[in-house]
Amino acid sequence: MDRHDDLCVCFHVPLQKVEKFVRLNDPKHASQISECYGAGTGCGWCIPFLEKVFEDHQAGKPTDLKMSREEYLNRRKTYRQTGESKNRFSG
Image 1 (cartoon, rainbow, N blue to C red):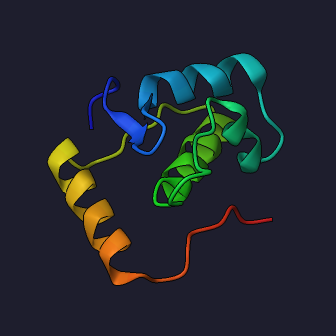
Image 2 (image 1 turned 135 degrees about the vertical axis):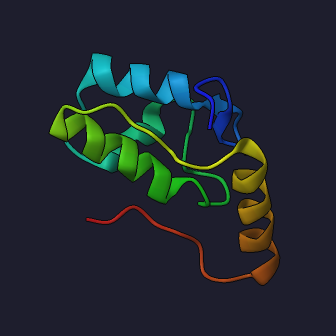
């Protein structure tokens, strides 16, 4: 996934913006990333990925989401079509 691709598709929040938010604000909980233009508050698909950005930041390492934009969007489409319960921030 490219840094300029939307991590939160619902609110068009790119990975780069989320990483910058985390770096500048140093949130104490992953759920605080929702303050970054509402990331994670729409369909919930991106929450596990937002949590990964948070965990990588806490560990002091760069985030590498090892999937293409197309794969990410296809998985999101499947997530939304299944009607499973919405992802939620842990804790």
